[in-house]
Amino acid sequence: MSATLVILGATGDLTRRLLMPALYRLYTMGHLEGLSIVGYAVEDWSREQFLAHLEQNLQQFAQDFDPTAWARLAGQVSYRSGDLSAEKLGVLHEGLSPSALFYLALPPSLFGTAAQGLGQAGLNQENGGYRRLVVEKPFGYDLASAEALRTQMHSFWAEEQVYRIDHFLGKETTQNLLVFRFANRFMEPLWNAQHVAQVQVTFAETLGLEGRWRYYDQAGALRDMLQNHLMQLLTLTALEPPSFWDAEILREHKVEALRSVRPILPEQVDQFAVRGQYTAGLMKGQPVPGYLQEENIPATSHTETFAALKLYLDNWRWKGVPFYLRSGKRMAADYAEVAVQFREVPTRLFDGERHLSNWLVFRMKPQESLDMVAWAKRPGLNLETRKVVLSAPYERQGDPEYSAYEQLLLDALQGDRAHFLRFDEVEWAWRILEPVLSAWKEGKPEDYEANSEGPAAQAGLMEPGQMWRPLNIPEAE
Ligand code: BG6
Image (cartoon, rainbow, N blue to C red; front, side):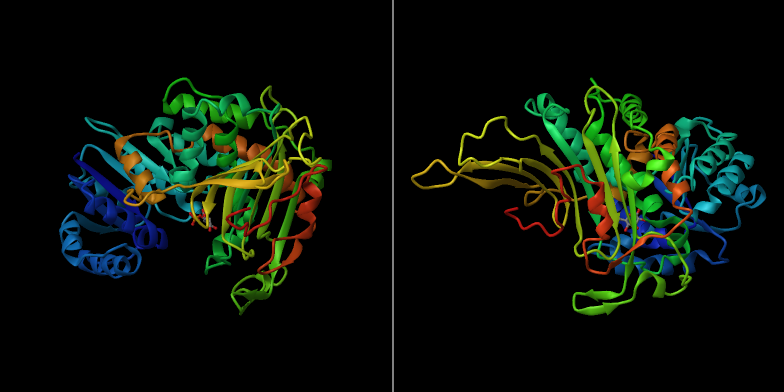
């Protein structure tokens, strides 16, 4: 493949921590032959300075850094400095392959300007190759700003040229939701409201702000995690089965799932959404500050660091099944999963007990695994039951491991749009959240202590007889 990858924002955090390590790894695995990489940023650096900066960061962030391999890859890397005006961006024409991909590793407020600048400079024009634009999340700040950004972008770039990243779509467990559902005959008959009682999507992090105050205090957990990552996990769990593998059909089905989400009425937001903000506590025995004491966070900030939602999909398959989504920072564990609970069996044949805990769990953290929680006979003279967990670690020894960015960069270079968001997916995700975003302009989040399970009010979202799954579930459930 002969192509150019231009990274706008090449001196920034995303490039040094995630993009370059991913590119380096892809290179060492032989995937980047014929690709030139151009870094572009405002810093007035020489190529040597840029390479030294990359090398220093690769030593820290790349797996198995090998200076010889880097020296070879560095031969494919150049640097240009300039701002986002068409006039300055025009310099990128020099030495550009007919096929080029422009990666906006920039603050979200600059996505529109950059897309426009590239367009005005004519870099969007395809002539014997492709021109693609890769955009990071968040795409917009709410529905109106997402639509405005789209209009700005689309005066120059066609939808097919735009690759909107949600890095969760590059994760193994996310992709496995589709594979496990549609490659196993026993799944489809059970995958509906008749058999499924509830779905819980949890993404709990022990991390706090990690110096990202500028972005995070504007965003909050609902925009940072639920609008994109968790909503994607929901759509992949809920969508109707495509009959063949095609990016457009897949995305069509995802949008259909989102469109069937019952709108939350403004007066009912409290019954469907809960927010929290962490206070000081002890993490691994060390004191950590509360959100309001974090550096640069205003003492009056009402930004939520935890958000939970209950959504219903009003369609034939899912009518009446609650989908609970939640994510928070400074929680008691790094714990993430999509957990599907099946309904109780109709009889109580054994030990008069209710057999409620049939779960199928797609676990992402702490380890990727697939767990089925079932009932089996307790050894002994009586016909009694006990829980067993059929657990399959996702990876086997020797399996190749790719990070989400490695997968997605390669997909974008190869033109596979299946794991990128189409605009209407983003749009519908915002639409679902609009009433919540609007209600949350008033009032404030509930406090929760760092190293806890989150705010107490989250329990109020649950339907009778349902409870959040605890974090830190031991292997044997
Ligand atoms: C990012 C969010 O998109 O996803 C972060 O902005 C979050 O706040 C991160 O920590 C979680 O994803 P991962 O892949 O790092 O676990």
